[in-house]
Length: 196
Image (cartoon, rainbow, N blue to C red; front, top):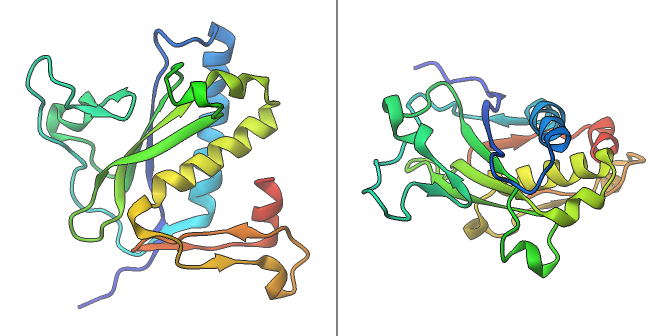
């Protein structure tokens, strides 16, 4: 039996910005530049040991129920047409002024589905809060990358390893990493500098 080689994580990005507090220019920048930029950074440095072979899906919710949501996003793509195939993670991005935003958050992310075999998150919702709009585009990109790491790491796993690049004789800032089962983080000096 041939062992599968690790490969870059495949992330399906779905933005749901209709009805958000963002103006049209900010929606376009988030959907076309910032969110895809964060995904590109993550896919460059995160690999999966076992690429997902099956569709990412959830049962269709009953009408009027709160089921079928992935945090603040409506997760219809996960039950329509058999789910989403060919990806390891579905990331829903919203920009809603929620109660969590009122507590001073720039953004927040939580996984909403996990793989039954690996325990690895397969769908997550990332919400950008109004306070984030005070950030420069590079800072907001850094925030999105940070939140995407939260999407990859199930909070139930806890911290298992903190990697200090200074321990490897690199002149890079410290990068905290919590690898999830099945994920490999390949950190290079330029990656840590690019994310700051």
